[in-house]
Amino acid sequence: MLDNIQETDARYYDLHGLFTFKVSGRGDSVGEGLDRELCRFRIKSGKPDLSIEFGSFPSDDWVPTGFSIDKNLFYDRALSATTVLWKTSSVIKKRDVRYILLGDMKKPNDNVSVYIPSTIISRRRKPKFWRNIPQELLKKNWAKAALLGLRRESFYSFEEVDNATNEVLMLIIQPYLYYRLPTRGYSFVHGSAVSTADGSGAIFFGTSNVGKTRVALEMARQGMDFLGDDLAIVGPQGQGFSYPKRVRIEPQDTLIYPKLMALIRSSMDGRQRFVFDATRKFSKGKAIGVNVRLPITDLLPNTKVRDSFRLRTLIHVKRVIGSEPFVQELDHDSCVNLLTSELFWQFSTGGKQEYVSCASYVNGKFLEEEVNHHARVVEIISKAVDGAKCLELQLPTQFESEEVGKMINRVVSL
Image 1 (tube, rainbow, N blue to C red):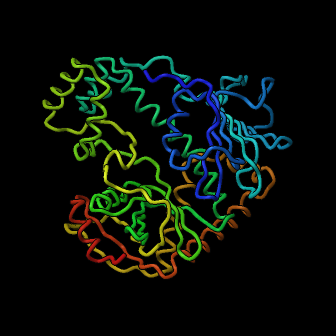
Image 2: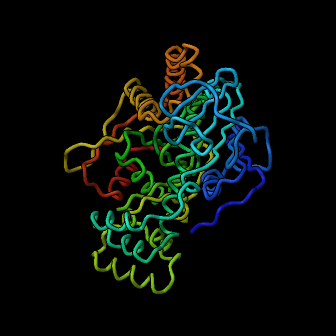
Image 3: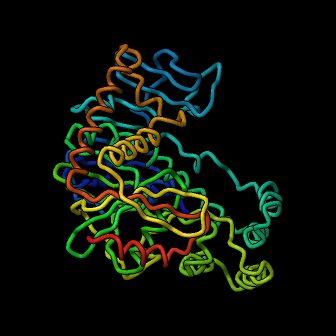
């Protein structure tokens, strides 16, 4: 079992001089996981635009207040406080509180504080091995079932901590940046980014699970610098910044990256390694059913991670029914439309971030603010794309990453 974090000094992070974050408090293993995600931006101190406090409430005598916006959502207009619950309850108790958000993420100059009294890790008592082993057996994940059978609690927690950390990123930090970046003249794009040694960059964008990460990792393996596998930041005159989160590894990638298997095996004793290796051999190289995130340098040790780039090429990645990958030119307006549509879809669907809009909803300005925000993003991305080469990469359902990487190198002049 991963040890809980005790009370720690506050940690500060500066995102390319645009925003400062502060993370502090008791966050079991999630606070450390968040630091692993943001460590590249760590600074000694600063004046935070966004503060995240683990393991506490705004005050010792704090109690939930406000009125219901949704079944798990309450808003207090006087305090500009949004309370998000773990579950609906007729009597709200402190243990039911998931987040407390003070301030308005959509207001350009509002300092925002988020309190996370408990994470999913601290709420869980014990891994439910009796439930998880049959699940993995049904999926034919023999190696993972063997680990759980040996009561590899650290392995179970490894995934769970990773998922809980990613939840904080996706539900707090990234929505904050999605709305605040345009107020500074920048915007997210939903895509992976690489660059040459002189900083000429390319962004691969498209829908989720289309192959952006796999293509970017292959370009990095072939010698390009890495900037991020899911999000990048673009701004005036094609200036861009990295957002290098840890790379999400899919189950099938355990067959490609030996480092991941070495990481899993390193936490086992001799008996457990023997059973695990034997099970892997029995399953004839079947990928272990695990989703984890690792720094790019753990996967590709020789890869350099850059902080900034000049946008030279945008490549829309699209899956098609066919036998060969194919590249064709894309006009500026179509490229901007696809980039902005992908971004809005990523942040505006799923119903997981509605708490960000409580203030504008209560004040009757939700639609107006969203329209204005979308217009700013379209303007920023349109200007960033000016002068860049726009292409569409059509990938068949099955493709060889190395061959696609070579093809991109032939048609793209960075």
